[in-house]
Length: 149
Length: 81
Image 1 (cartoon, each protein chain N blue to C red):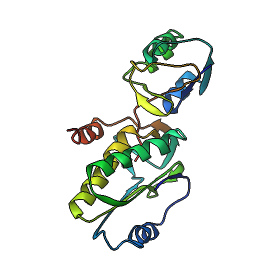
Image 2: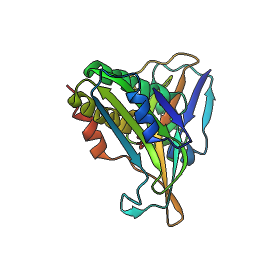
Image 3: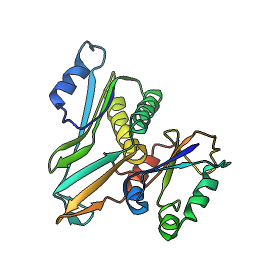
């Protein structure tokens, strides 16, 4: 399941949905990304997330499909928020179930690494009342490239 | 008619979010070259380093062939997550 939304999400509820009617998968890995107070050498007080509707959903679905071909996965949930967010707010949720813990761990990382380099979201941070677009990190690109065969 | 969209910083600096272009282009690269001729800011911010490109919602490179009615989007490297 892939969701792009302004509203917050409930991690407990998402975990229950992943576990529901699913006694095959012994492993559930969840990841939550949040708005932090310091990024790229400046303090952050607020964040705005822009996206490219339709392409965001499409690219997240393609990333999940790719993960499904690499690992034996049960359920996969990806939620990404857009719009105005405050310090500490949740931005992204990735939840993966699998028979094997290794598959669940790796697939969750793979999905995040691809999301950070291919899904069309852009962060604009407010620092000292001045909004600045976040620059893409080469370390994110490196993290994604390690999955290449 | 080709629809060209811009997002995030690219949209802000070009001061436009959408163009409709009634001209045939063989490839994304050809369109990019033409758009960069519109001025210094266009030249700088549509450079390959600064603007990724997607055709019909799928990331691609400049070799991608274009058809009439395609939706092309230029935007900065992504920063979600």
